[in-house]
Amino acid sequence: MKPHAERDAAAARLREMGAAVETIEWLDPEGAGTLATVRLPESALAALSVETRDRIAAVLREHGARYVVLELDPPAG
Amino acid sequence: VEPKRQRLVEIVEACESLLVGYSGGVDSVFLAAVSARILGADRVLAVTGKSASLPSWMEDTARDVAERFGLPWLEVPTNELADGRYAANPSDRCYYCKAELWSVLRTLADERGFRTVADGANADDVGDHRPGGRAAAEFGVRSPLLEAGLTKAEIRAWSRELGLPTWDQPAAPCLASRIPYGIGVTEARLRQIEAAELALRGLGLRDFRVRHHGSFARLEVASSEWAFALERRGAIADAIRAAGYARAGLDLQGYRRGALNEVLRPDQLVQIGGSR
Image (cartoon, rainbow over all chains, first blue to last red; front, side, top):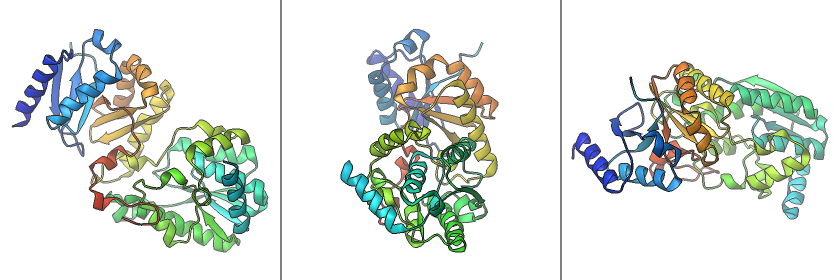
């Protein structure tokens, strides 16, 4: 599967699992391989458990991400 | 623990005089302090190799503890960055750094009449990827804490008893450990990482790493500080950008020791003593 297809497949799986993910980006920064950056809604951030973090990371790693990070910047605009 | 403590006393006594590679970290500070108690301060010299890869807060700790506890202390320049084999950042980068350090410290020990050169490796370091251990072996550097079987937890406990401020200090390897293997180590990158980490320390984070991926900073934070990091994520992003990164992300897996070693193949791993 191509990277964008992997990203879309991972997003679909996370939605099926009920994870509240707003966006997923597939990046390729220096020395990171594929790095997935996810944005969660404010309401989900406050209640983000270790289990949920691990689940999101595991799904994205299964789809080819070496690292999975939470977007730190607020949404543009 | 008591037999291990006794064993350490015996090992240090047998060294007669000791020059300790002293980075300002938990282990080397403990070794220097306990050795000064065992041998007397006049038979111990704590030496910090000052280079671009040493975080400034480690240098400050090294100096402060030496002054406070009356440890004879020297800072000497080391220049691993001048070695292209180090700067290329291979998976055994630490070997070239430690070869430079121990070469300088061994010469210094000979000049000043110190019989033994020692590092702060401990029993928990066995099994880790530690190519620097090969350099230590080549230069005849002893590891009294490891030889006594002392673990990090035991060293922290004993440090606390001795009143050392480093007893609960997070592990703090050199700044180059934030750069993925194969991406060159440069002074500019080290300064950028240091600036970002200094700013995050200023915000109150203690146990974390800024992993350098070009214009992207991947922040690993210990589980205990995850909630704090989330709460301050706006300030964290601003601080990281102020250090020159275009973008930053908080790693969902959190801080893990040696995270950049996860990509290494088994045949690239080097353990203490130089075995693969």
